[in-house]
Image (cartoon, rainbow, N blue to C red; front, side, top):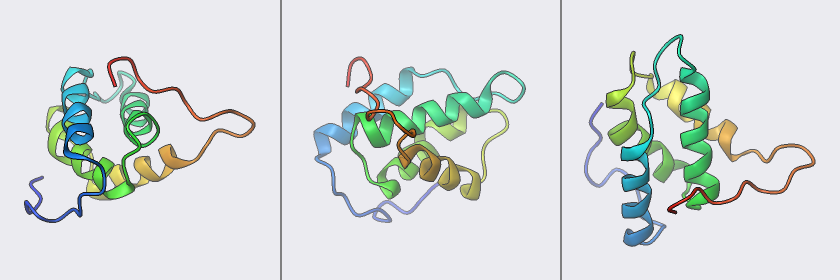
Length: 102
């Protein structure tokens, strides 16, 4: 799924986005019947909480850089839903810590 180059308004600094991109490149892809939902959720959570990306920035990185390695690939609706879920703090918990290397 390729998005137009200027389809996302950049809110985070380019260096944060670049680090988030490099972090995603090191994550294991999401594979059906092998913990795929958990891997996608963890990646989305790290982007929105660890790198402080907006919904659109996190979605864009997941769609462009993480999703092509997933089997099967996630739909736009599924990716957006995971990012929305990831943005919600766990009840009674502090915000997740930044991922290692963030």
